[in-house]
Image (cartoon, rainbow, N blue to C red; front, side, top):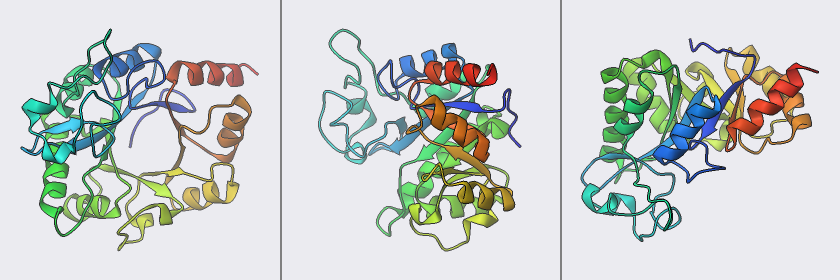
Length: 252
């Protein structure tokens, strides 16, 4: 069971991605400095099997390079600039993020971006197992979630490890792909897409699954509605802004 400091936990989406380049060490550091409780990030494997933190399948949008992550050697990927001409940023490794947060109280929400297919099964399993190995290496089982839009990933972890690792899915469940087990059986939490629909919160509460909301919630009034509906966590691009809004809500 994860522990929370406040009524609503604040997770920094790809770090503080509003003020800094997403999924960079600067974005992660400033998310911590802003007071975020959790960092959400995305893991892909390079061609030679290094877990790196980047959202897209390609480096095109977030770096000065071109190409697919799974077709690039780690050494080549690290030569790219994920910042700009004034601020140079490397694409981080998953281990670098663990090193940053292991001595803090920050929780990690790690989204596995290697999805299942017959062709990609080995890489998908490799990404999951390397992520779990780092969770264990840094003794962070009670401070990490494994997250994916691919239910195959979540079901793999559940079938092999039971409920040792907290699993994060999405609701309604049609947002997930490759579902073969009812997610009610294994999810710790689910991010609600139709986040003003009280029935969704009630359904998850009945199943003992925490209801979370995503980065589309930025207005204070909508945030209040989600809290009233039962949301326990918000993932946000701008953690300091949401923290301020939560303080305003708390103070009436």
